[in-house]
Length: 131
Image (tube, rainbow, N blue to C red; front, side, top):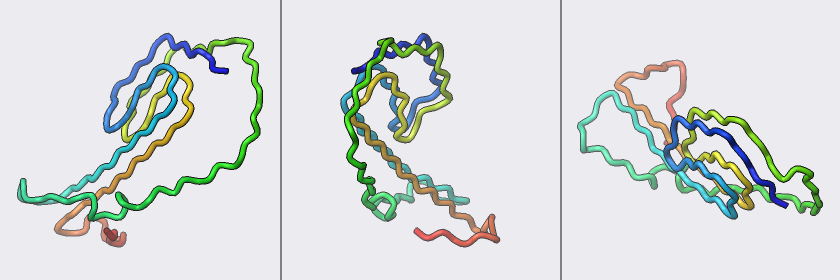
């Protein structure tokens, strides 16, 4: 049995990069975001293009845990409503969801690779990261 969600006020400052604000019941949600952030001390503009395929993080399969078999339970909700006065969110981003309502099946994924190239190592005590 589904219940009706009642929200008096939603304040959302930022929604970006495959982020979703969903109101109402949903059968399936499948959200994906990939990001490649490169910070360089110096570069010639327009001459730098790196494909996602160069980095393993974007091609590795996602390991989804096997859920145990669950027992079906019956629930009776004396009150058919879920009431919330106010939701105040700073941001929803990178395959995140603010969902108000019921959802049957949800799959979210976000892959991010940050690269920083400097002439001299700004963090000499740390090791160089592998690609």
